[in-house]
Length: 207
Image: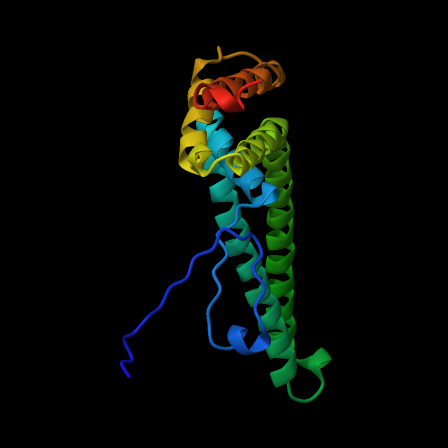
């Protein structure tokens, strides 16, 4: 027996079922791409290509939001610590009262800052959602392309290939208003994907 021994099995079955005994002895890794996860991937890619500034702002906002939230939690924990360590009548402890007043002022300022950051985050999310229809269409197209492999495994198209096709179509579309651009790219990427897939079909599989 060698502890370094490893055995790997692969299957084309999207949802393989194993008995509890087998499940306890193996590690199952599912690489299946779901429409929802692909939609999120494509949306991130689209926003990165179309609005790199928006993506950068989103990343910065997430970091700031986490930092401010941690700061607020720290202040609240400090208030609780002061109250927990107080001795005697806290109403007569001027030092404690001043410390609590300062902590409350800091917490109020941090809460206001948190609200501003959350509003900015919501605005960025709304801007990202303008590209959602394009991501949805891309996810539908790729899932449809994957169904073509039922005719022959030779028709398999990797996700990276589809993403590169998607990006080329985005680059070819002229820069116009966001809504008009999305409306123009949707049929363009559909047509491009159709042409690419049809070009690779065998004659017997063509209508």
